[in-house]
Length: 147
Image (cartoon, rainbow, N blue to C red; front, side):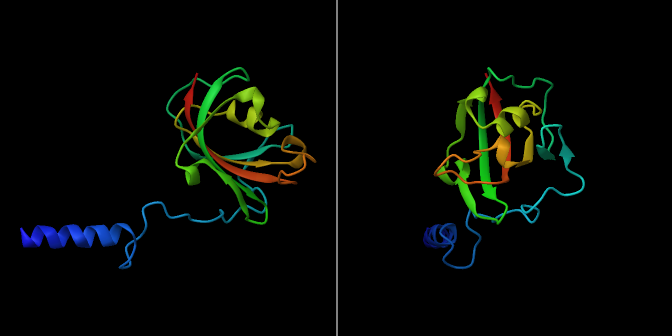
């Protein structure tokens, strides 16, 4: 019983990172290619660039009228994170035609289970909206559900 109690204390300390264990939800920081799309990124005619980070498991793609559930993180090209559903610990759900144009276009290319990195030029992002990040934005987006 004493050994079990000691083990529980060690596990509890490890869970909070007090003795050198890795925290469970460690933020890895901005991706190395956040400054510009790499040469192997796919470019659309609108200027959106994307790269598939993890393949999806299906053939159904959302439409602009679809409601999607995603996990995402967004950075400026200087590597400054400005938003993340992962940091909030809860995925985001929204109608696809109610977000920035780069997301509306990019998510229609995805299937459930897929994770992509998008490089969204300013004209497809917030394009001058006060209080929002400006210029090209980079998002890692995982498509969890389509309704």
